[in-house]
Amino acid sequence: MGAVTYDMEIPSSIPASKMFKAIVLDADTLIPKIMPHAIKNVEILEGDGTCAGTVKIIHFGEGSKFKSVKHRVDALDTENMTHSYSIIEGDALMGVVESVTYHIKIVPTEDGGCICKNRSIYNVKGDGHEITEDKIKEGKEKAMAMFKAIEAHLHSNPDY
Image (cartoon, rainbow, N blue to C red; front, side, top):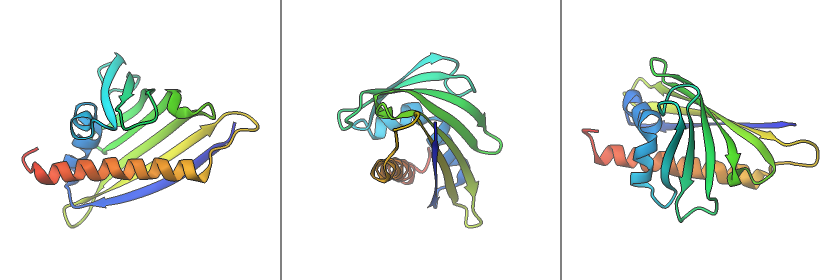
């Protein structure tokens, strides 16, 4: 099994603690509220929803070509604003990818905003399988759209 890794950094004017709360701690309820076409709902199967070992099913909305994925929280450090999780099952893996692991770190910036650092690791199934650049680009675009939607929501709701 091979792995394909990509890194992405997204700057924001939103304070780091507020962005971390929205993008990590409240994501299961916030994203379905502001992007129901992308994520319909999140169902917790094991754990409390955020701690390491939590397993949940993310049900995609009508705007997605996929039905659902199983998501496992690998680590959460609220003090350092880091979050690691893996997609371990589901049709979004397209029969080509064994799992996808994400490492997110929200870093405060001097101007009061933040940078969202995201490392994605696609663990491709054995020989003969590969993930195309188009699929990686599609994943980056979806991540960026979700981030920008959360950012816009936070700008519109300053008391969040």
